[in-house]
Length: 168
Image (cartoon, rainbow, N blue to C red; front, side, top):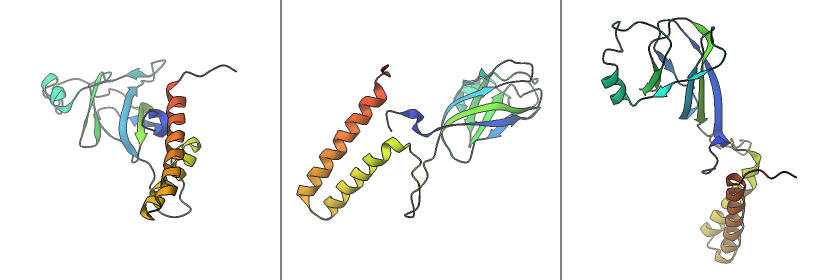
């Protein structure tokens, strides 16, 4: 999963509101991958450039007031869980903000809980759990067996994630 950023990737759309600079991130947001906007007169989404809060404050001093006019956003920062766009959008657009992010994995709390990872990872996770359980049972012979099975699966997954697809 470490090598496959798309395993937990998700895309959501947020409505742009004229005169509103700050937008809440999705509730299952973990890592922001990209933020794009689209006005009704645009054919496709346009990428917003990220700035750290400090750089944003320095480059756009007075952004949180009425000093600047509204327009097509060019930059954004994330401050206190909110995406802040600059300049502030001048028109409202339904689904005008495209948020690509990695979501928070679902906690497995009961027997019926589903993993939020793709099915290809499930067997490897079971092998890891068996390995850890055998270590807790101090059954070193079985632990070595489960450890090697887990490692082999992990290597195979890593190779599958880092190689280009092969035409068959």
